[in-house]
Image (cartoon, rainbow, N blue to C red; front, side, top):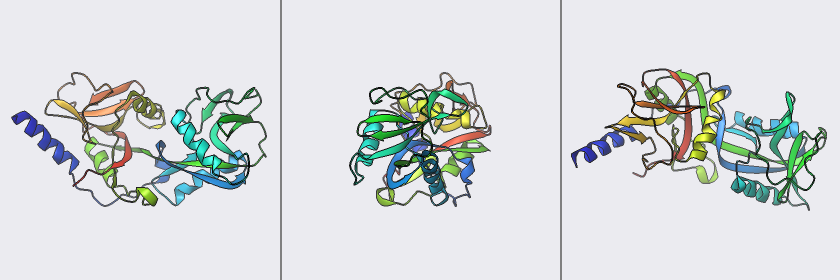
Length: 281
């Protein structure tokens, strides 16, 4: 009973750390992930213009990043399909964030550099000379025409990679000082924190972004307290692997392309912030 009380008290203290004044965050330091919401434009642009149009929203809504829509699974696909279908004219079709890079014309990649697992191509699609992708109905169509114009779907993401070197506690303070994007249904009840994740899918998705960091490992919201690993969102029933048998003083969690590790909390490295529901008072 005593250990349980102590663990809960320590966890309450960590989750209740005061939020300081928000720091100035340069948008160039941020990389996006984890879909928060999406928005459709009936303005018709080329793929390159649509991409720049989505990215330009960053200037108005720091520290959030927008990009052409990225679809990780069938749920994402269905959501983008429904958004595009809301456009008023028949056979609505929209650009998405899938393309071939100039450096590798054999590989389809999303605008966040992840490769594409084949799904939902229309019959006989794509052609070998296609460079860009649009969605129409429940199918994807390749396009080689750089001057063709279509509507497009932008995506707002709420995971931020901060490319500044800080200790674990400094990173925690930085995340919790970020301003929450107050727009529509996300206006109240949310806060930023060091990243917590609880499925292998989420872990893998975050790992694919670590290569964008300036350090090999990045801080996440994992802390060893009273002999057990705790996430900053207060959850402990994980479906992911935590570091095993950390050495003395290795009490904070990092993430790399190889998985999670235990490190000294006073080391300095990049870190992930993400937006999550605020704890109920």
